[in-house]
Amino acid sequence: MTADQSGTRKLYWEDSFLDTFTATVLEVREIGEETWGVILDQTAFYPEGGGQPCDEGRLGETEVLEVLEEVGVILHVTDGPLDIGAEVEGSIDRGRRWDLMQQHTGQHLLSRVLVDEYGSETRGFHLGDDDSTIDLTKELTEAELSLVQARANALIDADLAVTARFVDRDDPAVKAARRAPPDVDLVRLVEIGDIEAVPCGGTHLPSTLRIGGIHLLSGGANRAHGLFRISFICGDRIRRRLMELDRMAAALSRTLSTAPSEFADRVADLFEQNRDLQAEIGEMQRALIPLRVEALKDTAEAIGSARVVMARIDDLPPETLLPLAAALTGEPDVVALLGAGVADTGRLVFARGEAVDLDMSDLLKEAAGILGGGGGGQPDHATGGGPRGEALDVALTGALDSARAGLTAAS
Ligand SMILES: [Zn+2]
Image (tube, rainbow, N blue to C red; front, side, top):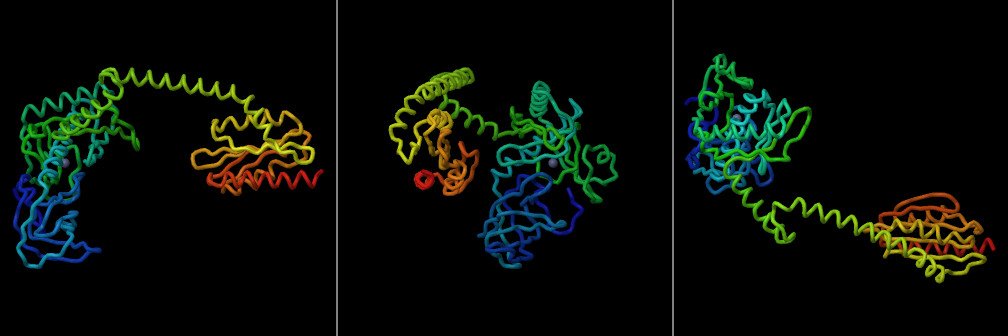
């Protein structure tokens, strides 16, 4: 196999299993803080491109952090400098490459089956660290996706050869390919048996059998930018995923005291129980309000002709502040200055009976300001709050002082 290229010789195109090699250092430049760009005469490091992430590994004593291609020249980003003219040993992370080849060859096969079975064309794909995705022109149902998966796995079992060759861009095989070739005279065509041929610069397995299985992730399908996205994993990732899921299922099984097949029913029951309990708690809390109102009235401070109740209500849900204030100010001479801490924030409800001459919204704005927030309302009723819940006591005490001043001046 030859390539129409000047620049770095791409050993990964000649042998996708090559993981150690020797090369001559042609150029070294410092490209960032503690990073160098190294150009070799040849390399087995695949550079980021065509949907396939780059290889990682070592060059001599340095670590290869990233690999990029710029017009045929491959730049190895390393964490240390190398000597120009020196011979250097390179080794790529074999596990990472193997995994990426399983995902990439699996993607080619999957794209073929999707178009053959349902006319759904691949518009893009991404090989991710966890899941990989394909963006399709046509949406498929769950049943159709199951069929695609079964068909793709049957083609894996059929052990079809996967090969790559360079052909003229006018070659009928290039014209027939689903994807437009890059702007080069010689196009690298990756073929699967006689069912698939597509321009691709990636590294591939020698046969479909080595993909080791394709699994479409249920729940991974969604629409994005007018395309239908599916998620999948191939080969060893399926085994690792199964192991993770099995461990999670075992842990959940112990917690829920039920078999995985009963999880959905058991969790639905728990949700229902929880809803019922919340409703019961709500009822009990509402039933407590009249008692609480009496207890709060006992703490009232007489100022002029009014009785002022100032309190923090942290043991009831914050939504009970409103009914509490309403019940308290049902009596015409009562002023209620109530606050509650909610998570880290503070909430305020200020209200007064009809016989009291004091503006609640003025008082509230001042107190909410201390909480770093705001609020408003009417002269007889105002609500608000702010993010500085730790200042709630200061805000309430300040409001009580202002009430004292206002009511004393008025009387
Ligand atoms: Zn490809």
